[in-house]
Image 1 (cartoon, one colour):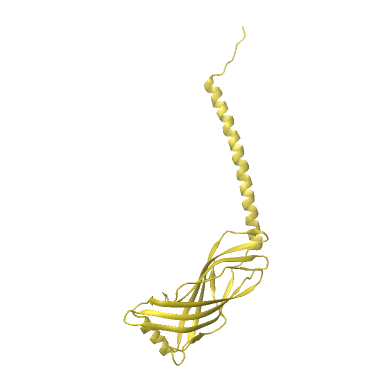
Image 2: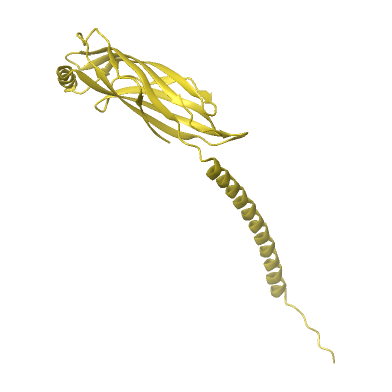
Length: 212
């Protein structure tokens, strides 16, 4: 008598489910392999090119107004700022999408933000950036006037100029995602004979610190 072997429905369902899972695993493995290959290629290009962060330097800063109204300690300011921006990369261009500039004195903002127009900077290019910074009725600390008076006695004032923005790297036709950057320029300005109405001018050629 011949013996007939039969498979239960439960056994068939288990085997069928196993085949489906195996198919999904193959698709997942292929997708992961493709994704890792793309990441490895991008990382390899990045290592080869290795873009350097842009260089900024302070060319000129003229302070035309820095007056405090009492008794409410409100500041009115007017500053003309000129910066030099340089792309140190020979194979990477830079898109500057956003640039916000302001001035500060001992941690206190003394001007409102001023926006600069976006621009593209090619390989090794240099660009002059000019900004008119101003503040009207800006609240300052109660010791602000005293600290400015001490600086007047010393004959100089130390100001900081900041640039906050976002940039993108360009390599051939490939453009990276946006990166935020911050520039800090410390300027030493000398007092004239009349601090209130006269202008103060900073030393030129001061290199700024840049972080990306």
